[in-house]
Image (cartoon, rainbow, N blue to C red; front, side):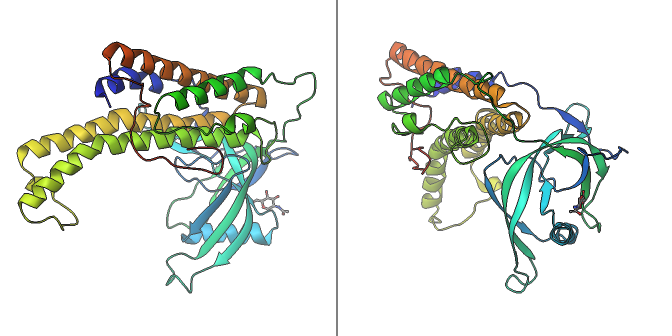
Length: 347
Ligand SMILES: *[C@@H]1O[C@H](CO)[C@@H](O)[C@H](O)[C@H]1NC(C)=O
């Protein structure tokens, strides 16, 4: 794979037109509850973003969250929200995303006996909806007794009427173009041809809704980034192995950076830089995409996904063009290597 192409094309893919994610200050406020706004147990899991229709398994070991589970089981609601929490890179201010997935506890297993009290509860959940946070009621720190709570409104499921029916022809046709392009070139990650007919676009939160496609897209980008990462690391790994062989130490499980010769040290740093600059933004953007979708209406989400697919087609066509100019032959998807099959029409 021609690394020149990667350098030319990757900044483009990082430049998505995503609207900003809306955040609230991570600070307790006082808000009156009413018929819409309730106090909802809150379990911030850093940057994780879940989407409606998804199954989520969590291992719970912290006492404060075990208590939260006891509480939601006892009071029968079985629900909590998982907002994203971030530290603003410019101001250092801590923030919580205004929109958060709602998880419903399906099953809780007490596994403290089996795990030597390492993990206490093993919990499976369904992501059943989205809540809009009005403010933080109570914060919680590790070691404390109580869990975090927010004032939030669980958003009702959107009802799509015939009048506001969304035109899905554009998204379908861009997707077909993308799949065709992926199959005429040698993209390392590609969607199956069948998926053109089964692309999930329906409103709602059930199986077959647009949310499945949102998740599929995010995994597609993650897989792309992970292939790229592997490709960037590959030649270095071979060189390090050769170096170990020379020293008759090829069975060493780990190797100290300081013990490497200077030329390899330099390469390690270069590989780290490339992973940071080329792969990390793709993972980040894939995560942002999920969070942005949480704050959108169905119609906006269709547009957002459509825009991403369209952008991917443009990128793919650009690669083909460039590789023809440079003479590298069929445009590569940017990362060579293994293919992964997925029941959702993902290769
Ligand atoms: C359960 O507790 C939450 C607060 O954690 C509260 O908002 C909710 O109304 C309670 N539900 C029931 C059924 O008591």
